Image (cartoon, rainbow, N blue to C red; front, side, top):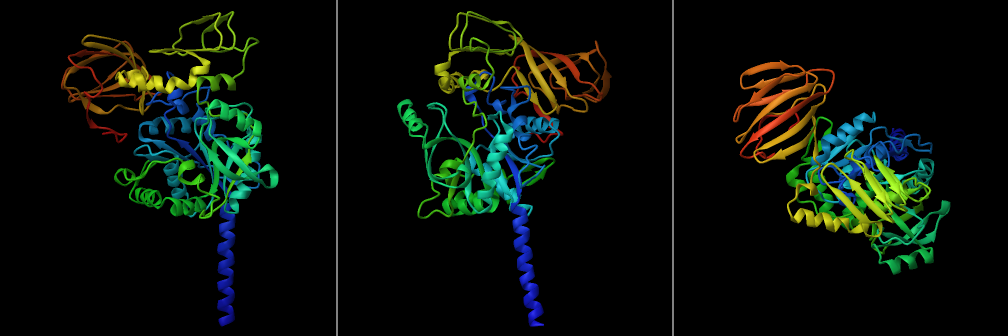
Length: 504
């Protein structure tokens, strides 16, 4: 009996070990989508940042990232349900863009911004909660990679090291001195071109960046990390116990909300803010380090798209080095980037190394060599309390969008588009009345105690203080023109009485 028990115990240990190894042979993509991307203003803004827009193609950067692991042919199985970590203000747009890609994602909604280390920690905890000590491939949502097979090859090598308990990052051998990137000093050589990490280096001045490139022992920090969920959590527990404890409590006390995982706002408010680099990566490899750090080379056309100059670098150019997007005409221009988002014609004559970005409500003209200074420009715009720092003229909502096409003293005109089956909140206003004219589709209108349909070319009037709701019961988009009139027309004059999207 003792031999049988001992044999059974040995088998259970072997089975557990096999299950853990099998779990480690799985990759879970983790998309870090909490950034604001102010360096790509005026296209990227606080309420609709660069990961949600199509900077270098038709798809948004988020959509390109979510589908980046498709076709992975390594020895590891890739989970078809990635984990996305985003902010509260972007959760509906994130969900919609991912749905359009045909991806069923787990979306963790951060109640507040706490940088990348807490975001990766929430993702690791969510993976462990499903008994998945899988290998996490954490990728920023706002980067561009042109050679996916090369990326997959680098991740396959990184996953082999991660499976053995190392924290791995992908480093990009530099092609030029660049002050916009952090650098990794490579250490002892390993198999498959990998190296131990000697140390992380902050964004250098131009002279120092040139020395790094000449030394050939410094690689750009891509911000892509490959690590087993348990290894990350153990390292964080050792190096930053407070972050580990508060993230754990926030997820434990959180709740599921439809497609979203929502950590507890109170607990998450106690989480210290820090990046993956500062919280963990700069400490690994030392005498008290819980694990080793490895860097694997990535030569896959990577760009962090951290400035309009970087966007120009990443895009195909004409014979004079110019890049055009939208209605753009160049005459005698060289090495310039021009983009028309508002539909207006942008004409560049004799320009050199210039960026011109035209949107519905703002125009940027900048020297490409000063593109990194746009962040300071946005800070100045914010100090002036100008709305252009935070929002576009077109504002996305979970039910569709509205576009403020005209405004003046005591009036405002909006174009409102509601997706099929969607509806706005039941609401009222203290200071404004509204006239609605249907120009496309069919509207189901609640006005006080009345419920009625409006077809194209029909209209209604919503007096001040009357509760109302707009719905699209049809199969095509509903489009209306709304004329507001009153003493105050701000968006904070909305009293929500009922909302199917859980907004306050």
